[in-house]
Image 1 (tube, rainbow, N blue to C red):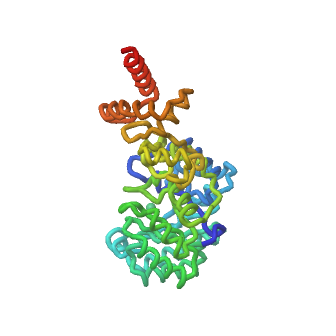
Image 2 (cartoon, rainbow, N blue to C red; image 1 turned 45 degrees about the horizontal axis):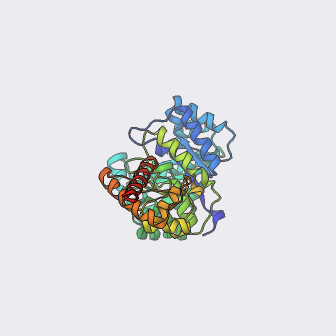
Image 3 (cartoon, rainbow, N blue to C red; image 1 turned 90 degrees about the vertical axis):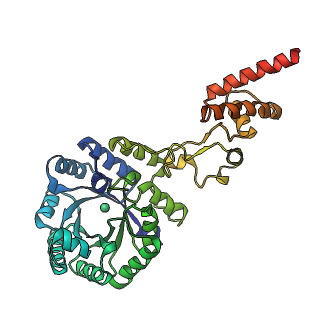
Length: 382
Ligand code: MN
């Protein structure tokens, strides 16, 4: 697995926006594209040009924004779709057509031959106009493998630059994914992009399995935004490649939290506090053992530092806290607790945290401390 070979393709602006109930304004689309470009993604799937109107305007503006990333338009395998993409000035097109029998029979109401013919026609048309082409096998994961291989071979012959392998309904798991992708890479030799969905919570795992099998493009969205349970999340895939596979793609990861929060707002999908990589609580430690470890040496309980993804470490004082964390917390306010004081104070901290069913605010800690001092003075006075 070589880092030079692996490229991030972000489709937040296409598959992400396709999510039921999500709409980006033109300003938001352009802003997200700029942020993705600053992050350093290789390609941005900016939308669906044939929709026209605001969508077309947004794509045109993104194309003219002078970004370093390649800008891709999404199309059905229909010439007029591709013409709309060309009018927007994109340098790359995705040409999508279903390859599974269930889609061919019940959705398209056509035949496998019809699918091959239209894919080839659309691909040749796009190549004639000098754009980069990704041929997308929609519902590839439920496609008869022999047919999928034939589809991929014909796409390659028609000049396609890569094959997007779509696990459209998120039905795969990593072991099967590995086998299928390996077969396509070995037998057809066309560059493969992983496009996975998270219906069983395996989008990122399946993407990594595909990469391990030789796929070189990874399709992702910010926050994993996408239809139903979403797509593979950009932030997960980038950090997992870096820390699990040792493949550093030189993405400016310290900007991840910023873009994740922006997309969360724009899509009206709040980030859960335990959201992988960028959630508010990812670097929050409360348990005495964990907080103690992290305060002594962060790598004891953190794989990467909060700063690396634009986050912040928090030592939360609550029911599970220990004396070390409490001493550290008070020292932030210039108060040096002795070990004995911390042990005493911890009792009231625990009691209050249980009563309130949450960790304590710093201010509450200060009140507890004042009460403790008062009590101590009174006891002494007696
Ligand atoms: Mn999709």
